[in-house]
Length: 309
Image (tube, rainbow, N blue to C red; front, side, top):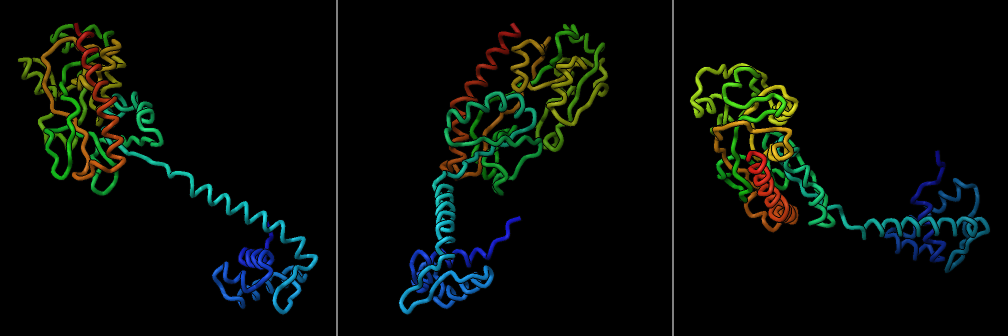
């Protein structure tokens, strides 16, 4: 543990020694000459040694003062330089983008590295949550939302339109709709979104497929889409999944879409508060989406189409 006199007293001493004047030191530090004299007197008392010889028009360092002064001068110079370096260093610029857990993991994370390539000097923060953030409160600079494209108070840039179909591991050997009776159905809870949007479910899919013999309430249920995707990859059953979100897995062949029908979904949009177009964080996120993510989504759709023949 360092045992030092008060920093204010050391600073007063260094200024007075450099200026050879209590008055000039007081002007530099923005205090009165009496305050400088008092601080130095306290410093001398704590050391038990005189540091100055007081003369009529100036002060002169004693032997002890001459020994102390160069050390303090170097120390204060070093501190001043460190402060200036910090002030010259540009502040870290961070852009925060929010999206659902599955969208973040499957579509954003694989392209996260390109963000800094496109936007030098910026850091990207991905906020993964299935609960929508309050963009007006600054919880994120922008978000990717799934819906009809109408978001009051927000500007929306369309990214892609989604679709849904039965998806599973190729190892399950599910080839025709009748095979669904031999495997587990994988479900996930859309939560509050289900009450606001017409979200795809096994019930809507079987109605579209005109299948009425399947027990659509049986199987494995998850409270998030990402877990349902992982379960499908692991061969735990067949899931009704977003073909956009699992496009990479379909292209690699770890998942297959054995049959239809395909249910058309809604759209994903990049959204941010209206009037924030020129804000730097929003601008860099929009640049990343339009120059890297949107083309990547188109490529994923093409790869998915080739994988399904």
